[in-house]
Image (cartoon, rainbow, N blue to C red; front, side, top):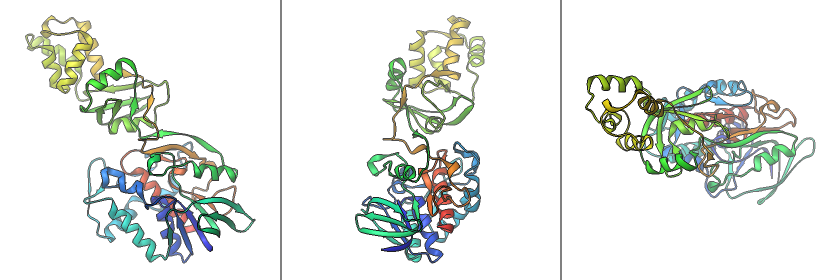
Length: 391
């Protein structure tokens, strides 16, 4: 089986690359080891696929080389993908913070990409694995479960390690290593954080309670929803900060970002001294949370009876609650993988390896990780598009 381009991995990046290479008249074979195409697309955004973000730009991505993503993102922008969605008449809406979702179902995005592949005469094979890859100086020779195949250009679009239950493996990193590439250390990102001891007990007691919070780690902050769970804390603000958190770091949480709690208490003490402290707390945080904060500090009764020091401690727990996670839920629930194939060894213009002619790496397997909210899909579309122009 002779091809111009073989793409391994039929996720968002692989599909986009196949479409673009096919449009150029290249003979393309897109293969995936899974039974279903685009499974990560299908389950994303609660089944509605948060397919891009209208604010997508380089500042929303993490990489050892923060400039690497600029070229691809400018060659194929979020507006380009939105135009493709409109061409296929897929109804969509902006949820918040620039996040775009399908009105109906994520399957529409998969169907759109498969239709584009068909028009570009791309051959797609599911449940197909690659056993070995060799390069003879001119062509790549692959041994696959469908027999031997050769190609001029080989594109690795196999993703990272997140959500192994839908087929994530380290295969892409293994291929990179075979051809001399280094890897930036990988870890789970956009993932809930976990705790031990007192904080875990506190979270368990509040399981299901959500709140708007500002969550900070180091110099980075996110202001979004936060959710208490029986394992720790989750929600958009926590998923976002998890990409910046490292073991041993303290995370600071402001549970009432629009209110200076200490000033609020002082005003209440002056104007409504007979009001119960629990009721005052319930005005600025959910009632169950207020109850537990009062219990934790051993305070009850009227605000008039509370010392300044006691109020300061309460206020600190609301505006400056400091917690030390013991870890995260890991790749099992992580939306993406941080780290990956070292971008210093790849062309930012074409995604081609600087070490091996005709070898390309795109999507999540590369050390480029977006914020939550459609940014990682945009990186998949952009990097896939770019490689498709050159592979």
